[in-house]
Image (tube, rainbow, N blue to C red):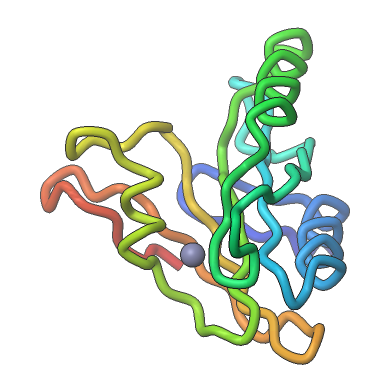
Length: 146
Ligand SMILES: [Zn+2]
C-alpha cells in the first residue's frame, strides 16, 4: 500500500519523503533546506535536492547555498524536471510560514516559484509535524494548504 503524500497537484513518493525527514533530522538542531522536483507531465515528486544551508544563523534561518542551488537547477534542466516544492525545517519550532519565509518566497508581492513550500517541525531530532503552504491567487498571499 502506498502512503504517498498528496497535496494539491503534488504527490511526494514514500522514498523521497523519507529523505526529506532524514535530512531534517540530520541537520537538527539546524535548519535543513532543499528542493523537490518532478516531471512536468506528472504530479509525482521523484527527485530531492538537499541544499546546504549557509545562513549566518542556521539554527533559526535558512539560506540555500547559491552554488548548490544553481547546480540543482542545471540538473533539473538536463533531466527535464520542474521544481514542485521547496522545503526547510524549523528546529524546536512549530509549523508556520514566518515573515522571513514569506519574504524569501515572494518578489514584489508575487511568488518567485510556482511551487508549494513545505515546513517540517523537528523536536528532539524527530519530525514532530509538517505543513504545506501555497499561494492563494485571490488573497495574494501564502496560506497553509495541508
Ligand atoms: Zn521557516
